[in-house]
Image (tube, rainbow, N blue to C red):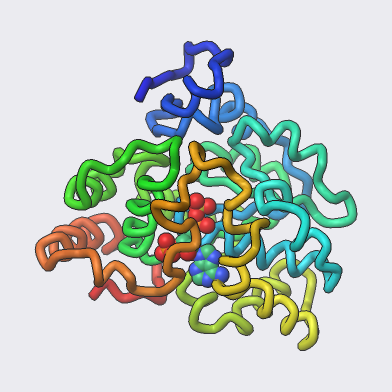
Length: 304
Ligand code: PPS
């Protein structure tokens, strides 16, 4: 893979971009959908007070939450759910396509935006507005497993050499999108400064109705029982697996080869137990404790 950094030119062909890496503030991003310009533009974005920003480390349930947020604002009119892909309903701010997609957003909704960027990249821009931020987190062991499988199907990410190496890279934080630990601590360290709600994959999985209600309240959009029922029906793993608007089947095989594995792969809590050896688990727990031990953060997942 070819690495680019701040000095590099933006004019690369689609094929070159597929195998390239953008290094931004020391973090690697797939060059297929990121450029230095798109990353820089995200950092200087002018938020509106009405914006809703979904923040995740990859594989933490981004697509799931994009679906839930769209369902909350579509108020029973399911046209966008059936006709607009997730990336057009809640585009990623740091991606090349954003400058176009943001102009196409439905003006009768608040702007739904998504990012995988670390807190330090967006904190300054966010502090100038009252935009609502939803931070979605997931047990990092499940994130790691999901990300490992995703590397095998995504044409814009390198094939992992082995699961063992992938674990080491994840723990060092040198993989694509940087360190999970820095991401979570960075964003949740801003809870006092921003209008931020923490939601976890695990709570949405275990208590979907209560979690959706909590989201509605945070968003100033309280939901009635019928609205909740419509949302719950359209954000299940089985519904989303069949929906081309959220299962990425619209993408050609060279971008995402789902004959090698599905984007919506398992959709469960604790799948890491079927992947980690006892030694990998021990190694992970040591780093997790060192990184998160005194963070004061409390999550609903167990590490054993
Ligand atoms: S990405 O590429 O960062 O946008 O990926 P992301 O959407 O964050 O994460 C993909 C994982 O979320 C799971 N998923 C779901 N789980 C349960 N229910 C629903 N409805 C759902 N939708 C997406 C998806 O299956 C990926 O997790 P794994 O563990 O790989 O199955």
